[in-house]
Image 1 (cartoon, one colour):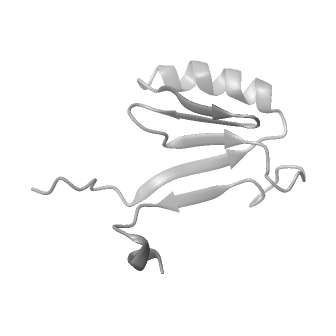
Image 2 (cartoon, helix red, strand yellow):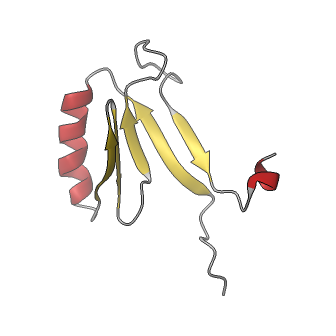
Amino acid sequence: MTDQNPSILSHVSLGSNRFDEAAAFYDQTLSTLGCKRIMAHPGAIAWGREYPEFWLQTPIDGQPASIGNGTHIGFFAADKASVD
């Protein structure tokens, strides 16, 4: 067994045009899964059990959230060389 996280996913981010309503929804919904707010920045909140896995955010480019705008999936990598 390895001490490395077996998941390939670091986090998932969803953009929202109704940020405050969505945040209230995910606060309530994700708490039933044992998740809590782990991090928060203006326009972004992350939930998880131990580390930020699910993010809600307003799109960084200031445009409305839409399919693909404000959404991204982060993958774990062992090191920068793996990313490069």
